[in-house]
Length: 354
Image (cartoon, rainbow, N blue to C red; front, side):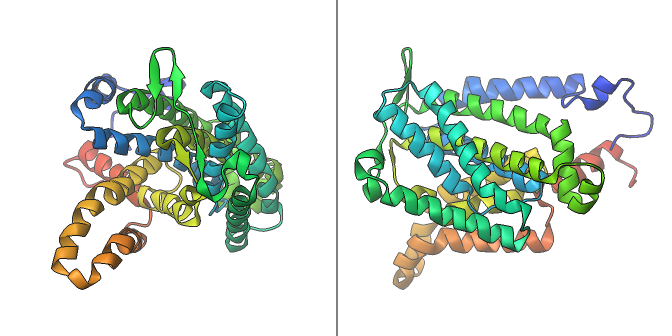
């Protein structure tokens, strides 16, 4: 929404993401602060949290394409992350493959697995599709646990060697180096996700989300584009899983359980469905809340309520997650991205109300 008298004179400017000199200046300042100042000013624990945000953001961006753009509900994104993590882990441990081609192969394999489970979207949708993806979550986790222990490590987990690129090492002991790797890939995947919505496929996704019968009547191949959405979403999850494997160095099926999938869906709800900015905001808010504020709050509450100390340590994150989700569903169902759009409209049109 632009004030009266402000308009774009070319299609290129109208389609541009960053349009004005002020926006370019702010974007440049943000890049300098993020990559030039933050890694060296932040503590090691803060960098670890930031790296985790970048990794989960990639998976949530894939889920945003599938659920936010195409309208296909998925409760198995964490399991697809697990596929990417384990395929990548096997390639770099058993076959001694470099982490970059291994990551691409793992992401492609995950996309193929997503295609297999995405075939159910032809026959079912809504609640029933959610149950189908829930089945994918359980099937993938069961397969990882019961695979040969020599390959996947079984329930004990798989040890992943540190990724190296020239003189740089990327693992949880080299958070600054890993920061540049994780945020570099996250920025690239965000760029692609932002532009997918502006392509022919992105417009088809939106048409299917809004009304699949009308989309089919207009000549859109619904099954083809639903499968494409599942493949892209799973590809993003595979990239996130490969990065996650190197970040923590030891992966197990517990890292990719149903609760993690539900957290990722909650990040979309908090941030706002259908918006790349919403995926970013929702991921940052919920992960900062879960991994930064709640570990500080839990000991304080345990001192106040000593009889509930154990329960607070084990269940506080889930309790707060449920409360936050209910608040957003009731008070702001369109998420933080919609609230940001309202704020932008208010200062652009000030002092007019419309």
